[in-house]
Length: 159
Image (cartoon, rainbow, N blue to C red; front, side, top):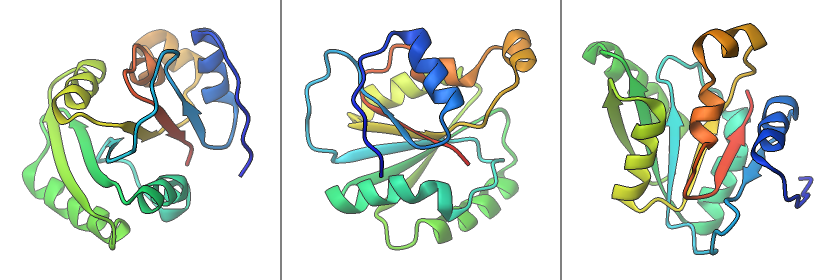
């Protein structure tokens, strides 16, 4: 695993996240280290997950014996569809202490920030797909929403 410590501005961090094809750990500037007891993995339930991009997350959870909360952000999720996808995710996270949470019809930034505060999360993890410039221009960027004003370190993984 390659490790580099860099102090970057927000725009530079966004460029690294979008253009580097390896896991990135983003740590807020004035963050004080504490043990990673609780990690939240933010996911769109429609994403097709495989074990490979989750390796850094699994490594951290195992190393610190952390609890993993899997948070799905949805818009009017179908309950039957959610149950099916939850079963598949249970298989991916087999052997890891994990729980599922879902927040519906709330903006990504507000949902994550609220969850982090209420549950006292120590690390937020997510998988970021490369977004085209046109898509970011028209609809905004989920990457911006996830990283903006984060209170805790972020683990950004790529599929």
